[in-house]
Length: 223
Image (spheres, one colour):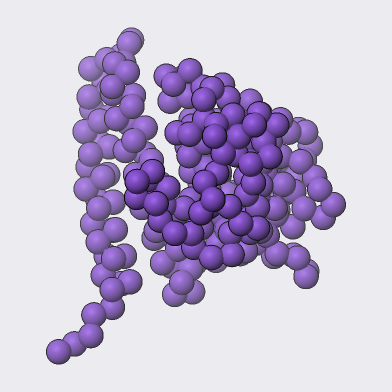
């Protein structure tokens, strides 16, 4: 009996799911054409959830490719403000529907060296998580701290649960099915951060409950 490569099998299944999800998103786009002026709230929610599932599947595929050394970041110079703007654009509709205020803070001339697609995808996932657990407010910021550019997400929710609290999230957290906290977004972001290296410095993440709003705070450090 041949041994089964379950990681490859799961990757193949994710590809199939992405194909089905692509067809679903095409159908949603067709439905949106029937509502040119005022799109139903439920349709906007459906579109967002489809995009969120697509992002999660992309993360799983990226992690698989990293695991088999088939994925390397494309590092280039980017303005941090442009990355934040991309994240805001992808979340503006749902945040408005949920009456959540998304505040951004960043110097317009702050430059970072990164794979902007990877970083934007990671931040989008974490903002989505913050939206799920906050009460009414999220702060998305970027700043310079010594030799690192730091992207920070803070909210006014109840904070990270204990299983997602650790310096640099050194290991994959235990999954809490009762709350839906899988930790995938944090694990993905930690993995992406560690791919960003300059000289003797490597990217990393930190999680704590020291948000200025009283909730969770996530920090992504890029050298």
